[in-house]
Structure formats: structure tokens, C-alpha cells
Length: 256
View 1 (cartoon, rainbow, N blue to C red):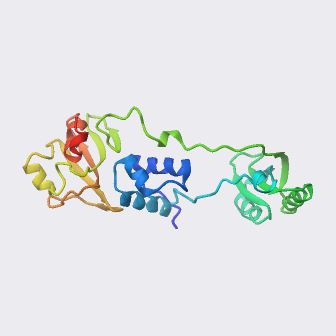
View 2 (cartoon, helix red, strand yellow):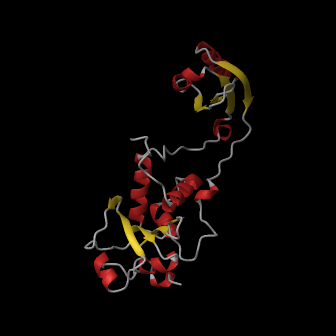
View 3 (cartoon, rainbow, N blue to C red):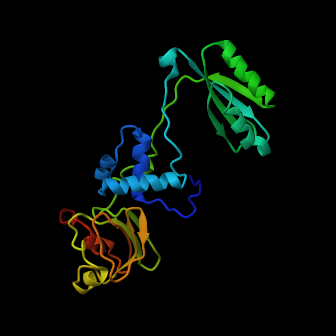
């Protein structure tokens, strides 16, 4: 799996997927997200795979209450290690029995946080001893009372989004807009080539299609390229009215 996302720019569909998975990865299905984002379940599955391949989604983890499970406790060790050894030591700490989470920080003191699970004082002393044997200074330790998680709100539904619902939108200097929109099931442009859409007046003369994403693949648009439902189309609107330009890509019920 690649950990580089240098060539991948997430859009609103990706953000909504990430928000849904952060809220509940186990009970979030592709059809459920697809209904929220107005794309096909296949597109959602392809996007999740791309996010995983680019190392943006790094894994799925169960949030376990060990106290309820077996009357075990969580202990947090705040440690300090030399910056040059931080990454290597963090990997070693992961192998200590009882450690369930290791977090590397950029600060000097307290730059390594270690979360461990145990039941007795003896277990936590053993973990403390293992840390010391690695040359790690434990600045403080504390019993964790509770830990709460919340999906990143900015990746959720945007209540202030315009009624014409692009999936991504960027306004450029000079009055041009870059718009990314998902093609609706019965949009006027479906099954038309770009040349046909322009000739028939379906595609606004101020619109320039610059990219098409289809089933996880990015296509270079040409005159003979036929637009299909669920395509994610990136276009430049040069007339200052992007809501008019995307009419060709919306279902009839979405049009204003």
C-alpha cells in the first residue's frame, strides 16, 4: 500500500466518505454513503479503495472499553525520547505486551504518548520497566478515565452549500470557476458525446470539461467522449454563473 498522497487531491465525495467512516466504519455501507452523496455505490467503493491505496485512510480500528470487557484499565504514559530516535523507539514500544496505542509528537518534552491496558499494578510496573530498558524517560503516567471520538465536522454535509450542489467548487481570479459535479441518472448530457452536447446546446458554451472520473479512472475528455451517469466531471465555467453551467449534468429534479 502506498503512503503517498502527493498526486491525489480529495474532493467533497472523499470528505463525505471519510466523515461517514469516522462516525461508524462498521455500520457504514457503500450504498448508504452513495445515497447521501448522490453517486453510485460502485463509485463509493472505488473512492474508498483509492483513499486506502494513497494512505489517506490508514486502517479501521475497534474502540474497545476494556474496563467493561474484563475490568481492565487504560494507562497513559507521557514519555520523552530524543527526536532522532523517536520513530524507531515508537516501533519498539509497540511490541511491549499490553501497549495498544503509540503516538509520536513533534514537541521536545512529552513527545511520545503510550497507551497501555492492564489489570494489576504488577502489569503496569512491567510496562514501565520495559520503557525504561529502552532508554525512554517517563515524564508522567495517568489512569485514562474516558476517551471520546468525533468525526471531523468539516468533512460532513455542508448546510451552506448552494442549491445546485457541486461536489467541489473553486473560484479563480478573473471570474472563472472550477466545478466538480457528479452526473445525475437522467441528466440531459447522459449518453451524449461532448461534441454532440455542444452542438445541441446541452453543454453551455461557457463550460470547458477538463477531466472525467469514471469507476476510479481519470479520463482525458475529447469531442467523442460520451458522458455517462455517475461520471465525476471537472469543468471550468468562464461566464461567472456555474449554477447554469452544471444544469446539463443534473437530474431534472435537481435543476433550479
